[in-house]
Length: 117
Image (cartoon, rainbow, N blue to C red; front, side, top):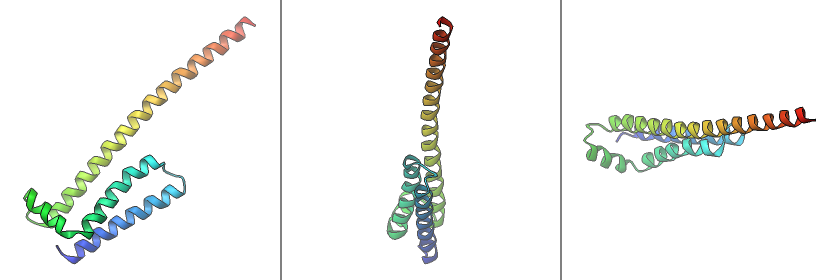
């Protein structure tokens, strides 16, 4: 594996890790979302630190070149992030619907109490 590919992956992993840390400290993202992004950043850093692991994976999956494995790996990471964020959004949608129903019931009770008075 070429040194430029290792250096590039290491820089991308560290950059992603630092950006997520800065955004998390500013309070612009919750820890739940930060963990979704920290996971691929750490995975990229680990694979850059241990390039023999990349070679082993490339041979195991039948990739001709390491760069093709890197691109495939990044696509898999992006799909996993999309799935994780979709699950989080679905959970938030359920909570929002429940809150809307509870607020509507409370408004109805308040209106009923006001009408009786």
